[in-house]
Length: 137
Image: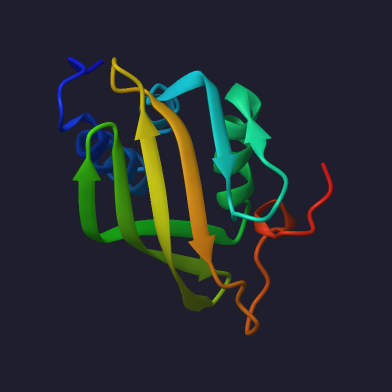
């Protein structure tokens, strides 16, 4: 996908947000290593592999729910990028925001191998339980 040089973590974040916001599921799924891990949020059980990629998409785009990703700052170091991310949710008739820090790690080919998401759980609306610390698998 990419050439393994510095810059791939930033590119992965940029592609991640572009494909997500365009609702291009196939292109978004192709960004991930089959061995990817998600800590989303950190503190919840880690999600693994292609199933986690599909579940993250499917649980975010349930009927009545649509999320947009807005990276406010990307700081890259080697094969990692720290991102100040604003998640804009359209939940039925409400627009909500979840702010957080996300750490992306890519492999030498530029595929995403890890995402760690740090954010406070909202109290004024409910996230899908897939994105809460006490979710059950």
